[in-house]
Image 1 (cartoon, rainbow, N blue to C red):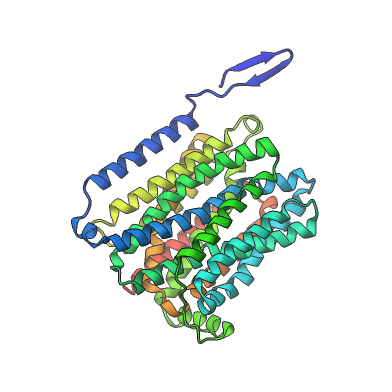
Image 2: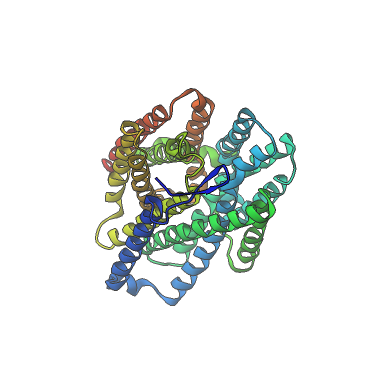
Length: 438
């Protein structure tokens, strides 16, 4: 038990600097640095030879924009629920606001994929910044309907964030004649950097909220969003999918691409299973870690930082793995890790140390997942409807999360993670089916 200071009749717990959370964070960061050193100390000469000055400039430009986009997102995420609670909304109203965001991403997000393919991915990246800036301003108003409009815009922004930046980069990478083998390097670097900016954003958001209130992180996020928009306007070329197609025709073609190509269908199904369960984890890790005894003293910031460090470790493992193995081998392990770590949570829900370390292992899997699936989608999804197809994959995962949110208050934590375990198992089967077409 942590030591305590006694002040009058009040006992104030003092966090032990050597507790499991601080120690695990330090160990994971050390492991991440070690993997990075080992990877960079023995680079693949053939791959390094492909990295021309033009490619390095292109990669650096994209990663800067990508990290600005995610930094602004990470700034806002930790305080959405806290702000709604501060405004006096009850749990039901807060759940409705979250559901609006996921429904928006599920329905409207499908359309914006085709819009970006037709009108340009650069335009869509700027639209992401504009939508998120307006959504940030809505957080300044204690009004349910204004906040609901903000959640609607956040749903659109999320769909854009997870499709159009990646689509622009892959299209531009190919248009400039860079070797396809370098895509994995870019995805790995971006995911690694995302872990760093997530930790930085968490610290910045906490500092802003502590000094200026729960609205402050949303205002601070306007700065990186504005920088992103200006940087994209000044330095990016525009690229398109099939710009001759109407938006609805583009959506129809994306659907046909999935239905007529079982390989794409099973890859998308595996992605939807993993991410649907992953987003459920985002909502459920806090109640899974909390007890009546520790809920006032859990160091949520340190735990979040440990999760992000684990994700960074995963991206480092990915970079080391693809030096000598095809990327298609990795997702079997990713889905397996996700299945067993969620199962451990179900079996040992009362042992919070076991739950915590299961979560850390799951986050390592997430760190491998994003660059691995980014590389696979770049390789197997057709260029002319890339953003539309990628957003189509997000429909079932958003539907899954909405259903869980609607029912979560009626289910014990272990039941929710049991559902996630089954979902990850289905994802593994879908990926194995995808592999059968290789």
